[in-house]
Length: 147
Image (cartoon, rainbow, N blue to C red; front, side):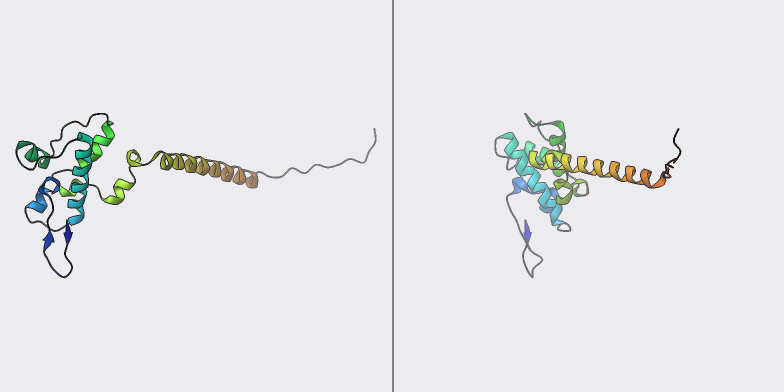
């Protein structure tokens, strides 16, 4: 769904992927409708079949009642469920989705692990440096006497 330049009209898409607020004419926050559509697309891919164009399952989806997604973690299912929430206020933003660990690639997850290790090492080094500055230096005196 997208707003047309210089118009208040909206280009409508396939109702299988449209949120209820959009179908009802509420154009206040189209980005939340886009998140619903993305969630519906992901849901469809995970189901391995097309979404219904109408009927009870179509109604269930708009009410937030989704079928379990096989071979997916509970966390992933909850992300899709939240993306397709009936209340637009409950849907995440695109920025929030990009921060979800479950949606990161293995390389991105590994980078986070390595960054956390580096941050921990830097914190330990800084703590040691503060400790060394706070500890008074002992001076050793040399004796010139021979026993």
